[in-house]
Amino acid sequence: MKLKHFLAAATVALGVFAPPVMAQDAAIEAMQEYMMFSEYEAGIILPQQIDEEVFENVLFIDTRDAEQYAAATIPGAINIEWREVLDRIDEIPTDRKTILFCNTGSLSSQASFALRVVGRDNVVVLQTGFVGWEQDAAYKP
Image 1: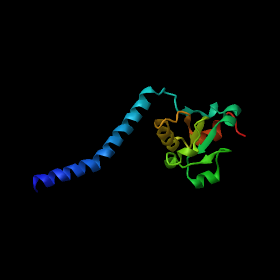
Image 2: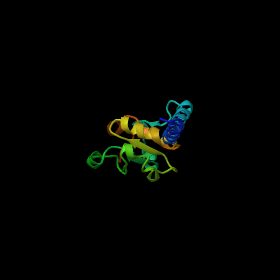
Image 3: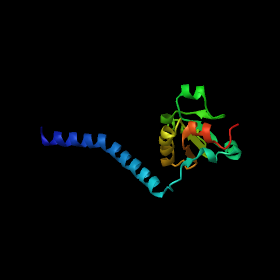
């Protein structure tokens, strides 16, 4: 391969591969910044903290799949599957606390983390999930 062909190929390769690397660096930086400055309890709420006042002033997002949502959910909750939260971020309010939940809190934790990294500090995950809410919520309508 001639030097000019090699240089042309290298230039194209750098153009193709550089943007994802820069995007990855920005994502890592955002996650590091979030993690370094978050308090230990930031981003969670316990079922015992959900009294009537909290219940009436938050939006619940059920991050489970549509079938689980249809079977049972927290009254008034909307369904946005955990892996769709960034695609549907416009449906998630910025002006009030939003509680994400799944069955136990594991999938909704991932969704909540993604939303908090992109700046949604009003979003929290329900520790112990729907199961915990059924067993321990301070208020259930």
